[in-house]
Length: 295
Image 1 (cartoon, one colour):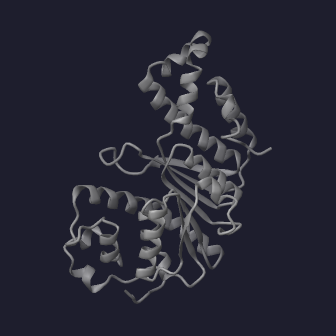
Image 2 (cartoon, helix red, strand yellow):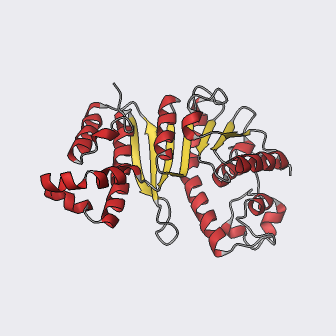
Image 3 (tube, helix red, strand yellow):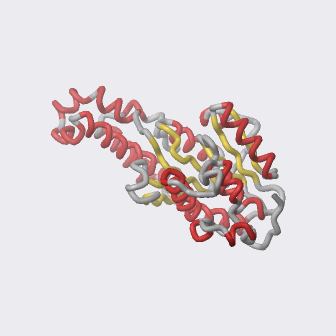
């Protein structure tokens, strides 16, 4: 599996890739065998509709993450990246294959996942491909905050489709670890919607704007929107610059919002006040601990 390396953390395109009919759809240096093991390519090296969707999502996300990794390397010789809710570690393996394997020793990609069978599979796959800088830990996102198996400070935190409050736990982890960059694709945000639903009758009597989330489908969608608004305000309240965009086109995924936060030590007072105001206006005061701001 050895490949010749070149500068800037990229490997030259392998001979098998150059001749491959999918070469135009794959990144230079991408391991075909790895994509097969991740079930992004079929065993005979082809893409089906589902695998093409997965590949497009991960590559599109890589397009946003690669410049962040390069910024880290401008200031220090190694990168510590933690991927929360890693699942089968599509993102971690492709990041390592395209970027990390070309770096000197010291950089590490950590995959955090609660399902032991996926952790063991990822460990075995990393061994087979010689990805020595990958670590996989059988932990919840919340448990990882206090785990001694992770460094005291990390550079980049990612959470791709970490369900419900796992995204908020990833944010808490990133804040505790003083992460320079945070990359989130939120998923299945149910907590805020459940609080809106529980307090709906009281809110309807108080404010006509509650009509926005009176019907159940609107409660779910509005709750999802508000959750991400609160997350952005929370990150800004901790000094981050936040950019929100879409991951891929809606034809590929309904869970489509991409949040990228870069620590800039920005003023914190206004976003903190706005976050508290949103919580009060929507009757979500009980979630203050979830969306905590600096004391």
